[in-house]
Image 1 (cartoon, helix red, strand yellow):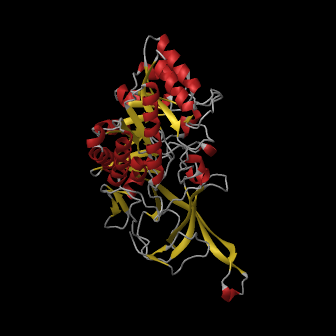
Image 2: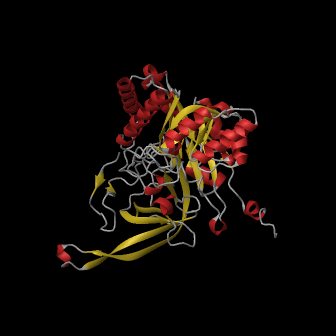
Image 3: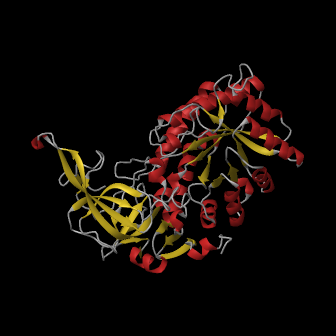
Length: 489
Protein backbone atom coordinates (compact mmCIF):
# COMPACT_ATOMS: atom_id res chain seq x y z
CA UNK A 1 0.00 0.00 0.00
CA UNK A 2 1.39 3.40 -0.87
CA UNK A 3 1.54 6.17 1.67
CA UNK A 4 -1.18 8.79 1.70
CA UNK A 5 -0.97 12.55 2.03
CA UNK A 6 -3.31 15.40 2.91
CA UNK A 7 -1.58 18.07 0.86
CA UNK A 8 -3.48 19.03 -2.30
CA UNK A 9 -6.59 17.38 -0.87
CA UNK A 10 -9.83 18.72 -2.29
CA UNK A 11 -12.71 19.69 0.02
CA UNK A 12 -14.97 18.03 -2.56
CA UNK A 13 -13.43 14.61 -1.93
CA UNK A 14 -15.19 12.15 0.39
CA UNK A 15 -13.64 11.71 3.81
CA UNK A 16 -12.25 8.27 3.03
CA UNK A 17 -10.34 9.42 -0.06
CA UNK A 18 -6.84 10.73 0.64
CA UNK A 19 -4.22 11.89 -1.82
CA UNK A 20 -1.65 9.21 -2.72
CA UNK A 21 1.95 10.35 -2.38
CA UNK A 22 2.67 8.48 -5.62
CA UNK A 23 -0.05 8.57 -8.25
CA UNK A 24 1.86 6.01 -10.33
CA UNK A 25 1.85 3.31 -7.65
CA UNK A 26 -0.57 0.39 -7.73
CA UNK A 27 -2.26 0.02 -4.39
CA UNK A 28 -2.80 -3.49 -3.16
CA UNK A 29 -5.02 -5.46 -2.90
CA UNK A 30 -7.07 -3.86 -5.66
CA UNK A 31 -5.01 -5.37 -8.48
CA UNK A 32 -4.30 -8.85 -9.80
CA UNK A 33 -0.94 -10.27 -8.79
CA UNK A 34 0.85 -9.88 -12.13
CA UNK A 35 -0.18 -6.28 -12.85
CA UNK A 36 2.78 -3.91 -12.72
CA UNK A 37 4.37 -1.00 -14.53
CA UNK A 38 6.83 -1.92 -17.24
CA UNK A 39 10.05 -0.12 -18.16
CA UNK A 40 8.10 2.40 -20.25
CA UNK A 41 5.86 3.29 -17.31
CA UNK A 42 2.71 1.75 -18.76
CA UNK A 43 0.77 -1.01 -17.07
CA UNK A 44 1.38 -4.61 -18.00
CA UNK A 45 -0.41 -7.78 -16.93
CA UNK A 46 1.46 -11.09 -17.00
CA UNK A 47 4.08 -9.33 -19.15
CA UNK A 48 1.64 -7.95 -21.75
CA UNK A 49 1.43 -4.16 -21.94
CA UNK A 50 -1.86 -2.30 -22.02
CA UNK A 51 -0.60 -0.52 -25.14
CA UNK A 52 -0.34 -3.88 -26.90
CA UNK A 53 -3.76 -4.93 -25.63
CA UNK A 54 -5.28 -1.68 -26.88
CA UNK A 55 -3.62 -2.10 -30.25
CA UNK A 56 -4.83 -5.67 -30.68
CA UNK A 57 -8.28 -5.62 -29.06
CA UNK A 58 -9.31 -1.97 -28.74
CA UNK A 59 -11.07 -0.31 -25.83
CA UNK A 60 -13.08 -0.54 -23.68
CA UNK A 61 -11.69 -3.93 -22.74
CA UNK A 62 -11.96 -6.23 -19.74
CA UNK A 63 -8.48 -7.56 -18.98
CA UNK A 64 -8.32 -10.68 -16.81
CA UNK A 65 -5.26 -12.26 -15.22
CA UNK A 66 -5.91 -16.00 -15.68
CA UNK A 67 -3.20 -17.12 -13.27
CA UNK A 68 -4.58 -14.80 -10.61
CA UNK A 69 -8.08 -16.23 -11.09
CA UNK A 70 -6.77 -19.76 -10.70
CA UNK A 71 -4.72 -18.83 -7.64
CA UNK A 72 -7.69 -17.22 -5.87
CA UNK A 73 -9.94 -20.17 -6.69
CA UNK A 74 -7.34 -22.63 -5.41
CA UNK A 75 -6.73 -20.54 -2.26
CA UNK A 76 -10.39 -20.85 -1.25
CA UNK A 77 -10.47 -24.58 -1.96
CA UNK A 78 -7.21 -25.36 -0.15
CA UNK A 79 -7.88 -23.04 2.81
CA UNK A 80 -11.38 -24.34 3.50
CA UNK A 81 -10.37 -27.97 2.98
CA UNK A 82 -7.60 -27.53 5.55
CA UNK A 83 -9.77 -25.68 8.08
CA UNK A 84 -12.64 -28.20 7.88
CA UNK A 85 -10.59 -31.39 7.46
CA UNK A 86 -11.31 -32.57 11.02
CA UNK A 87 -14.94 -31.39 10.92
CA UNK A 88 -16.43 -32.80 7.73
CA UNK A 89 -13.45 -33.84 5.59
CA UNK A 90 -13.30 -30.65 3.53
CA UNK A 91 -15.54 -28.13 1.82
CA UNK A 92 -17.23 -27.85 -1.57
CA UNK A 93 -16.52 -24.41 -3.04
CA UNK A 94 -19.02 -23.09 -5.59
CA UNK A 95 -17.96 -20.37 -8.03
CA UNK A 96 -20.71 -17.80 -8.59
CA UNK A 97 -21.48 -17.94 -12.29
CA UNK A 98 -23.59 -14.79 -12.04
CA UNK A 99 -20.47 -12.72 -11.24
CA UNK A 100 -18.84 -13.56 -14.58
CA UNK A 101 -19.35 -16.61 -16.74
CA UNK A 102 -18.02 -17.97 -19.99
CA UNK A 103 -16.93 -21.43 -21.09
CA UNK A 104 -13.24 -20.74 -20.41
CA UNK A 105 -14.01 -19.75 -16.81
CA UNK A 106 -16.12 -22.88 -16.30
CA UNK A 107 -13.14 -24.98 -17.39
CA UNK A 108 -10.79 -23.11 -15.02
CA UNK A 109 -13.26 -23.63 -12.18
CA UNK A 110 -13.41 -27.37 -12.79
CA UNK A 111 -9.64 -27.69 -13.22
CA UNK A 112 -9.01 -25.93 -9.89
CA UNK A 113 -11.33 -28.30 -8.04
CA UNK A 114 -14.33 -25.98 -7.62
CA UNK A 115 -18.00 -26.43 -8.43
CA UNK A 116 -20.31 -24.05 -10.29
CA UNK A 117 -23.33 -22.12 -9.07
CA UNK A 118 -25.79 -20.99 -11.75
CA UNK A 119 -28.94 -18.85 -11.57
CA UNK A 120 -30.68 -19.29 -14.94
CA UNK A 121 -31.18 -21.51 -17.92
CA UNK A 122 -28.68 -19.42 -19.86
CA UNK A 123 -25.99 -20.01 -17.26
CA UNK A 124 -26.82 -23.72 -17.33
CA UNK A 125 -26.36 -23.62 -21.11
CA UNK A 126 -22.85 -22.18 -20.67
CA UNK A 127 -22.06 -24.90 -18.12
CA UNK A 128 -23.29 -27.60 -20.50
CA UNK A 129 -21.33 -26.17 -23.43
CA UNK A 130 -18.17 -26.13 -21.30
CA UNK A 131 -18.67 -29.79 -20.43
CA UNK A 132 -18.58 -29.61 -16.62
CA UNK A 133 -20.32 -32.67 -15.10
CA UNK A 134 -23.84 -31.90 -13.92
CA UNK A 135 -23.20 -33.22 -10.42
CA UNK A 136 -20.73 -30.33 -9.94
CA UNK A 137 -23.38 -27.71 -10.77
CA UNK A 138 -26.06 -26.00 -8.64
CA UNK A 139 -29.09 -24.02 -9.80
CA UNK A 140 -30.35 -21.02 -7.83
CA UNK A 141 -33.18 -18.58 -8.54
CA UNK A 142 -36.39 -17.38 -6.91
CA UNK A 143 -38.59 -17.99 -10.00
CA UNK A 144 -37.31 -20.98 -11.93
CA UNK A 145 -39.23 -21.77 -15.08
CA UNK A 146 -40.46 -25.25 -15.97
CA UNK A 147 -37.87 -25.31 -18.73
CA UNK A 148 -35.08 -24.50 -16.27
CA UNK A 149 -36.23 -27.19 -13.83
CA UNK A 150 -36.35 -29.76 -16.61
CA UNK A 151 -32.94 -28.70 -17.90
CA UNK A 152 -31.52 -29.10 -14.39
CA UNK A 153 -32.95 -32.62 -14.24
CA UNK A 154 -31.71 -33.41 -17.76
CA UNK A 155 -28.20 -32.37 -16.72
CA UNK A 156 -28.51 -34.36 -13.46
CA UNK A 157 -27.50 -31.37 -11.38
CA UNK A 158 -25.91 -31.95 -8.02
CA UNK A 159 -28.39 -29.59 -6.37
CA UNK A 160 -31.39 -27.41 -7.06
CA UNK A 161 -31.66 -24.69 -4.43
CA UNK A 162 -35.38 -24.25 -3.76
CA UNK A 163 -36.55 -20.79 -2.79
CA UNK A 164 -40.22 -21.19 -1.77
CA UNK A 165 -42.89 -23.72 -0.81
CA UNK A 166 -44.59 -23.31 -4.18
CA UNK A 167 -41.34 -23.96 -6.02
CA UNK A 168 -40.63 -27.00 -3.85
CA UNK A 169 -43.88 -28.57 -5.01
CA UNK A 170 -43.20 -27.70 -8.66
CA UNK A 171 -39.70 -29.20 -8.57
CA UNK A 172 -40.93 -32.30 -6.79
CA UNK A 173 -43.88 -32.80 -9.12
CA UNK A 174 -41.72 -32.35 -12.21
CA UNK A 175 -39.17 -34.87 -11.00
CA UNK A 176 -41.86 -37.34 -9.92
CA UNK A 177 -43.55 -37.15 -13.34
CA UNK A 178 -40.21 -38.07 -14.89
CA UNK A 179 -39.76 -40.98 -12.51
CA UNK A 180 -36.82 -39.22 -10.84
CA UNK A 181 -35.80 -37.54 -7.63
CA UNK A 182 -34.51 -33.96 -7.66
CA UNK A 183 -31.57 -33.27 -5.36
CA UNK A 184 -32.77 -30.26 -3.36
CA UNK A 185 -31.32 -27.72 -0.95
CA UNK A 186 -33.71 -25.39 0.89
CA UNK A 187 -32.69 -21.73 0.91
CA UNK A 188 -33.51 -20.21 4.28
CA UNK A 189 -33.51 -16.59 5.41
CA UNK A 190 -31.97 -16.57 8.89
CA UNK A 191 -32.77 -12.90 9.52
CA UNK A 192 -29.12 -11.89 9.71
CA UNK A 193 -28.55 -8.31 8.57
CA UNK A 194 -25.21 -8.06 6.78
CA UNK A 195 -23.34 -4.76 6.77
CA UNK A 196 -23.76 -4.12 3.07
CA UNK A 197 -25.90 -2.26 0.54
CA UNK A 198 -29.65 -2.83 0.97
CA UNK A 199 -30.03 -4.28 -2.52
CA UNK A 200 -27.34 -6.93 -1.99
CA UNK A 201 -28.32 -7.96 1.54
CA UNK A 202 -30.25 -11.20 1.09
CA UNK A 203 -31.00 -12.77 4.49
CA UNK A 204 -33.42 -10.30 6.09
CA UNK A 205 -37.15 -11.03 6.00
CA UNK A 206 -38.38 -8.23 3.73
CA UNK A 207 -36.98 -9.42 0.39
CA UNK A 208 -37.69 -11.92 -2.32
CA UNK A 209 -35.27 -14.73 -1.49
CA UNK A 210 -35.66 -17.79 0.66
CA UNK A 211 -37.89 -19.51 3.19
CA UNK A 212 -38.40 -17.62 6.42
CA UNK A 213 -37.22 -19.14 9.69
CA UNK A 214 -39.63 -16.90 11.62
CA UNK A 215 -42.55 -18.77 13.16
CA UNK A 216 -46.10 -18.90 11.81
CA UNK A 217 -45.56 -17.03 8.53
CA UNK A 218 -47.42 -19.48 6.28
CA UNK A 219 -50.75 -19.89 7.96
CA UNK A 220 -49.87 -23.29 9.43
CA UNK A 221 -49.89 -22.53 13.16
CA UNK A 222 -46.61 -22.92 14.95
CA UNK A 223 -44.55 -23.72 11.85
CA UNK A 224 -42.19 -21.45 10.01
CA UNK A 225 -42.02 -21.65 6.22
CA UNK A 226 -38.58 -23.23 6.64
CA UNK A 227 -39.86 -26.00 8.91
CA UNK A 228 -42.87 -26.66 6.72
CA UNK A 229 -40.55 -26.96 3.71
CA UNK A 230 -38.32 -29.48 5.50
CA UNK A 231 -41.28 -31.68 6.38
CA UNK A 232 -42.75 -31.41 2.87
CA UNK A 233 -39.45 -32.10 1.13
CA UNK A 234 -38.69 -35.13 3.27
CA UNK A 235 -42.10 -36.61 2.49
CA UNK A 236 -42.18 -35.87 -1.24
CA UNK A 237 -41.42 -38.87 -3.52
CA UNK A 238 -39.87 -36.57 -6.12
CA UNK A 239 -37.41 -34.89 -3.72
CA UNK A 240 -34.11 -36.00 -2.27
CA UNK A 241 -33.51 -33.49 0.52
CA UNK A 242 -29.78 -32.77 0.71
CA UNK A 243 -29.81 -29.97 3.24
CA UNK A 244 -30.00 -26.25 3.90
CA UNK A 245 -28.63 -23.15 2.26
CA UNK A 246 -28.35 -19.49 3.21
CA UNK A 247 -26.75 -16.38 1.80
CA UNK A 248 -26.68 -13.17 3.84
CA UNK A 249 -25.45 -10.75 1.16
CA UNK A 250 -22.49 -9.57 -0.88
CA UNK A 251 -19.40 -7.40 -0.43
CA UNK A 252 -19.19 -8.23 3.28
CA UNK A 253 -16.04 -7.71 5.35
CA UNK A 254 -17.25 -8.27 8.93
CA UNK A 255 -17.16 -11.91 10.12
CA UNK A 256 -19.94 -11.71 12.70
CA UNK A 257 -22.80 -12.07 10.20
CA UNK A 258 -21.40 -15.30 8.75
CA UNK A 259 -20.85 -16.76 12.22
CA UNK A 260 -24.37 -15.94 13.38
CA UNK A 261 -25.96 -17.37 10.23
CA UNK A 262 -23.94 -20.60 10.55
CA UNK A 263 -24.97 -21.02 14.17
CA UNK A 264 -28.66 -20.40 13.42
CA UNK A 265 -28.74 -22.91 10.56
CA UNK A 266 -26.93 -25.59 12.56
CA UNK A 267 -29.40 -25.17 15.42
CA UNK A 268 -32.30 -25.41 12.98
CA UNK A 269 -30.79 -28.49 11.38
CA UNK A 270 -30.40 -30.13 14.80
CA UNK A 271 -33.99 -29.24 15.71
CA UNK A 272 -35.31 -30.83 12.50
CA UNK A 273 -33.25 -33.94 13.18
CA UNK A 274 -34.70 -34.24 16.69
CA UNK A 275 -38.30 -33.43 15.74
CA UNK A 276 -38.66 -35.33 12.48
CA UNK A 277 -35.67 -37.72 12.54
CA UNK A 278 -34.52 -36.06 9.32
CA UNK A 279 -30.76 -36.11 8.85
CA UNK A 280 -29.67 -33.60 6.23
CA UNK A 281 -26.13 -34.35 5.02
CA UNK A 282 -25.23 -30.91 3.56
CA UNK A 283 -25.15 -27.27 4.66
CA UNK A 284 -24.27 -24.37 2.37
CA UNK A 285 -23.17 -21.28 4.30
CA UNK A 286 -23.15 -18.99 1.26
CA UNK A 287 -20.48 -16.33 1.01
CA UNK A 288 -20.39 -12.89 -0.50
CA UNK A 289 -16.93 -12.06 0.82
CA UNK A 290 -15.81 -8.54 -0.03
CA UNK A 291 -12.97 -7.35 -2.27
CA UNK A 292 -11.00 -4.11 -2.46
CA UNK A 293 -12.50 -1.56 -4.84
CA UNK A 294 -10.75 1.39 -3.18
CA UNK A 295 -7.66 1.78 -0.97
CA UNK A 296 -9.74 1.74 2.21
CA UNK A 297 -11.35 -1.66 1.57
CA UNK A 298 -9.82 -4.45 3.64
CA UNK A 299 -10.76 -7.92 2.36
CA UNK A 300 -9.91 -10.91 4.52
CA UNK A 301 -7.63 -13.69 3.23
CA UNK A 302 -9.32 -16.96 2.37
CA UNK A 303 -7.50 -18.80 5.16
CA UNK A 304 -8.68 -16.31 7.77
CA UNK A 305 -12.30 -16.62 6.64
CA UNK A 306 -12.02 -20.42 6.62
CA UNK A 307 -10.58 -20.65 10.12
CA UNK A 308 -13.22 -18.32 11.56
CA UNK A 309 -16.06 -20.27 9.94
CA UNK A 310 -14.59 -23.62 11.00
CA UNK A 311 -14.34 -22.49 14.63
CA UNK A 312 -18.06 -21.63 14.69
CA UNK A 313 -19.16 -24.88 13.03
CA UNK A 314 -16.88 -26.97 15.25
CA UNK A 315 -18.05 -25.41 18.51
CA UNK A 316 -21.75 -25.32 17.59
CA UNK A 317 -21.84 -28.95 16.49
CA UNK A 318 -20.06 -29.97 19.70
CA UNK A 319 -22.57 -28.02 21.79
CA UNK A 320 -25.52 -29.57 19.96
CA UNK A 321 -24.05 -33.06 19.99
CA UNK A 322 -24.41 -33.55 16.24
CA UNK A 323 -22.06 -34.55 13.47
CA UNK A 324 -21.27 -31.72 11.09
CA UNK A 325 -22.92 -31.91 7.69
CA UNK A 326 -20.76 -31.52 4.61
CA UNK A 327 -20.15 -27.79 4.33
CA UNK A 328 -20.15 -25.79 1.09
CA UNK A 329 -19.52 -22.10 0.45
CA UNK A 330 -19.96 -19.58 -2.37
CA UNK A 331 -17.17 -16.96 -2.32
CA UNK A 332 -18.88 -14.88 -5.01
CA UNK A 333 -16.89 -11.90 -6.28
CA UNK A 334 -13.93 -12.78 -4.04
CA UNK A 335 -12.58 -15.11 -6.73
CA UNK A 336 -13.01 -13.13 -9.93
CA UNK A 337 -13.46 -9.50 -8.86
CA UNK A 338 -9.85 -8.43 -8.41
CA UNK A 339 -8.52 -10.55 -11.26
CA UNK A 340 -9.75 -8.03 -13.84
CA UNK A 341 -9.46 -4.36 -14.72
CA UNK A 342 -11.25 -2.40 -17.41
CA UNK A 343 -9.10 -0.52 -19.88
CA UNK A 344 -10.51 2.74 -21.28
CA UNK A 345 -9.28 5.49 -23.57
CA UNK A 346 -9.69 9.08 -22.40
CA UNK A 347 -11.66 11.47 -24.60
CA UNK A 348 -13.11 14.79 -23.50
CA UNK A 349 -11.91 16.52 -20.31
CA UNK A 350 -13.85 19.27 -18.57
CA UNK A 351 -13.34 21.16 -15.32
CA UNK A 352 -16.29 22.66 -13.46
CA UNK A 353 -16.52 24.80 -10.30
CA UNK A 354 -18.45 23.39 -7.35
CA UNK A 355 -19.62 25.24 -4.24
CA UNK A 356 -18.54 23.83 -0.90
CA UNK A 357 -18.46 25.17 2.67
CA UNK A 358 -15.41 27.33 3.30
CA UNK A 359 -13.02 27.21 6.23
CA UNK A 360 -12.92 29.64 9.16
CA UNK A 361 -10.52 31.83 7.18
CA UNK A 362 -13.22 32.20 4.53
CA UNK A 363 -15.59 33.69 7.09
CA UNK A 364 -17.92 30.72 6.80
CA UNK A 365 -18.83 31.60 3.22
CA UNK A 366 -19.09 29.03 0.49
CA UNK A 367 -16.05 28.66 -1.76
CA UNK A 368 -15.90 27.17 -5.24
CA UNK A 369 -13.49 24.34 -5.94
CA UNK A 370 -12.57 22.61 -9.21
CA UNK A 371 -13.77 19.16 -10.14
CA UNK A 372 -12.46 17.65 -13.35
CA UNK A 373 -14.62 15.32 -15.47
CA UNK A 374 -12.60 12.75 -17.41
CA UNK A 375 -14.72 11.09 -20.09
CA UNK A 376 -13.85 7.60 -21.32
CA UNK A 377 -15.09 5.46 -24.19
CA UNK A 378 -17.28 3.18 -22.07
CA UNK A 379 -19.44 3.86 -19.05
CA UNK A 380 -22.56 2.54 -17.41
CA UNK A 381 -23.06 0.04 -20.24
CA UNK A 382 -19.96 -1.86 -19.10
CA UNK A 383 -20.14 -1.01 -15.38
CA UNK A 384 -23.62 -0.44 -14.01
CA UNK A 385 -22.62 -0.92 -10.36
CA UNK A 386 -22.00 2.76 -9.52
CA UNK A 387 -25.48 3.76 -10.66
CA UNK A 388 -27.16 0.66 -9.20
CA UNK A 389 -25.41 0.45 -5.82
CA UNK A 390 -23.50 3.73 -5.43
CA UNK A 391 -20.42 1.54 -5.76
CA UNK A 392 -17.02 3.20 -5.46
CA UNK A 393 -14.10 2.37 -7.73
CA UNK A 394 -10.60 3.67 -8.29
CA UNK A 395 -8.54 4.36 -11.41
CA UNK A 396 -4.96 4.97 -12.52
CA UNK A 397 -3.28 6.43 -15.55
CA UNK A 398 -2.35 3.22 -17.36
CA UNK A 399 -0.48 4.20 -20.53
CA UNK A 400 2.36 6.08 -18.83
CA UNK A 401 3.61 7.52 -15.58
CA UNK A 402 3.28 11.15 -14.63
CA UNK A 403 4.99 13.55 -12.24
CA UNK A 404 2.13 16.06 -12.45
CA UNK A 405 0.24 17.16 -9.35
CA UNK A 406 -2.89 15.24 -8.29
CA UNK A 407 -6.27 16.61 -9.27
CA UNK A 408 -9.62 15.42 -7.96
CA UNK A 409 -11.36 13.82 -10.91
CA UNK A 410 -14.59 12.08 -11.77
CA UNK A 411 -14.32 9.39 -14.44
CA UNK A 412 -17.51 9.34 -16.51
CA UNK A 413 -18.81 7.47 -19.50
CA UNK A 414 -20.10 8.58 -22.88
CA UNK A 415 -23.78 7.78 -22.33
CA UNK A 416 -26.58 10.32 -22.47
CA UNK A 417 -27.12 10.14 -18.69
CA UNK A 418 -25.88 12.46 -15.95
CA UNK A 419 -25.60 9.40 -13.68
CA UNK A 420 -23.16 7.73 -16.09
CA UNK A 421 -20.29 7.65 -13.60
CA UNK A 422 -17.54 5.03 -13.57
CA UNK A 423 -15.40 6.40 -10.71
CA UNK A 424 -17.08 9.04 -8.58
CA UNK A 425 -13.94 10.42 -6.90
CA UNK A 426 -10.29 9.71 -7.63
CA UNK A 427 -7.04 11.67 -7.73
CA UNK A 428 -5.44 11.54 -11.18
CA UNK A 429 -2.46 13.51 -12.55
CA UNK A 430 -3.26 17.02 -13.78
CA UNK A 431 -1.77 16.22 -17.19
CA UNK A 432 -4.18 13.40 -18.09
CA UNK A 433 -5.15 14.10 -21.69
CA UNK A 434 -7.23 12.76 -24.54
CA UNK A 435 -5.71 9.55 -25.90
CA UNK A 436 -4.35 8.40 -22.53
CA UNK A 437 -5.41 5.03 -21.20
CA UNK A 438 -7.05 4.60 -17.80
CA UNK A 439 -7.40 1.34 -15.91
CA UNK A 440 -10.19 0.72 -13.39
CA UNK A 441 -9.42 -2.29 -11.14
CA UNK A 442 -11.85 -4.68 -9.50
CA UNK A 443 -14.21 -5.05 -12.46
CA UNK A 444 -14.14 -8.83 -12.79
CA UNK A 445 -17.46 -9.36 -11.01
CA UNK A 446 -20.86 -8.01 -11.99
CA UNK A 447 -19.56 -5.61 -14.64
CA UNK A 448 -19.46 -7.58 -17.87
CA UNK A 449 -22.30 -9.71 -16.46
CA UNK A 450 -24.49 -6.59 -16.03
CA UNK A 451 -23.37 -4.94 -19.26
CA UNK A 452 -25.92 -3.56 -21.71
CA UNK A 453 -26.28 -1.98 -25.13
CA UNK A 454 -27.58 1.33 -23.82
CA UNK A 455 -27.24 4.05 -26.51
CA UNK A 456 -26.49 1.10 -28.80
CA UNK A 457 -22.94 0.72 -27.58
CA UNK A 458 -21.50 -2.72 -28.27
CA UNK A 459 -20.48 -4.65 -25.17
CA UNK A 460 -16.70 -4.96 -24.70
CA UNK A 461 -14.68 -8.13 -25.11
CA UNK A 462 -12.90 -10.00 -22.33
CA UNK A 463 -9.24 -10.90 -22.70
CA UNK A 464 -7.46 -13.49 -20.56
CA UNK A 465 -3.72 -12.92 -20.13
CA UNK A 466 -1.31 -15.58 -18.95
CA UNK A 467 2.45 -16.10 -19.22
CA UNK A 468 3.04 -13.29 -21.69
CA UNK A 469 0.18 -13.99 -24.07
CA UNK A 470 -3.39 -12.73 -24.39
CA UNK A 471 -6.45 -14.37 -25.89
CA UNK A 472 -10.08 -13.40 -26.24
CA UNK A 473 -12.38 -15.50 -24.07
CA UNK A 474 -15.43 -13.37 -24.90
CA UNK A 475 -15.49 -11.54 -28.23
CA UNK A 476 -16.54 -7.92 -28.13
CA UNK A 477 -19.75 -7.12 -29.95
CA UNK A 478 -19.89 -5.27 -33.24
CA UNK A 479 -22.56 -3.00 -34.67
CA UNK A 480 -23.42 -5.85 -37.00
CA UNK A 481 -24.18 -8.01 -33.96
CA UNK A 482 -26.60 -5.37 -32.73
CA UNK A 483 -28.32 -4.96 -36.08
CA UNK A 484 -28.70 -8.72 -36.58
CA UNK A 485 -31.44 -8.74 -33.96
CA UNK A 486 -33.35 -5.85 -35.54
CA UNK A 487 -36.06 -7.57 -37.58
CA UNK A 488 -36.79 -4.43 -39.57
CA UNK A 489 -33.33 -4.37 -41.19
